[in-house]
Image 1 (cartoon, rainbow, N blue to C red):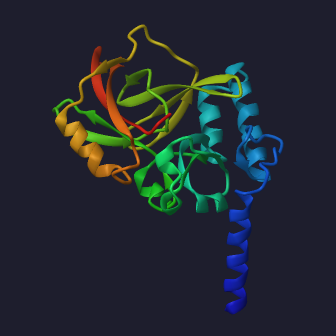
Image 2 (cartoon, rainbow, N blue to C red):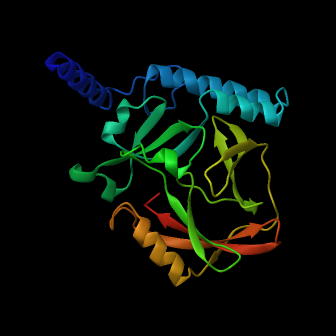
Image 3 (cartoon, rainbow, N blue to C red):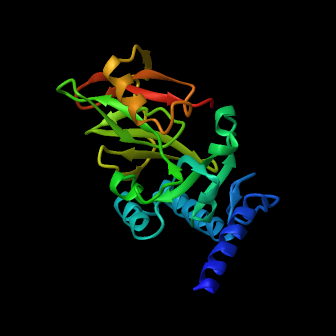
Length: 242
């Protein structure tokens, strides 16, 4: 038993040391990232498949089926230092001052995921994906998990559409209220997001669900175009520092 515990502690120590190594750039790893060798291989496969999808060598249905069968897609979030032991994660130093406290140090991260379902994310105690606060058709507020750092370009059938880029390759990232993810070809609408005043109910829910009172510097709301109702819908986003 002592040998098992010792081996586990050594593996953890080694993994933490990986965050202090000189950011060896393994093939496939993004620049300046804390990224393990096997993660670089997974990312290289993702980029190769994305390139084939963008050149219409793979259908959208097959591309998404393959993503669900294999490693999923890289999704931006935040991670604590001990998350460096996780497979298929890439981490960078956070530029946010409030994330550099020794007692609660956070890195920006990308983790390959097949979905962002809350039931599955509960297993990650050292990973945090942001929540945005929306308003449904009955004027009730609700939150959903989304990628870090982006504003959706529009809503479609209850899903938020993000225009994403990875290594010069563009794609559409759709996520619904349940956390299901689907990749599409890039799409745009002429109705651009615009600033709007947040509802008190949105702010209250956002503050209750924030990981800590100091995690975000502020919040803001944007009107996002809903293609189905052909109206704008207000969404609240947290603002960390970048």
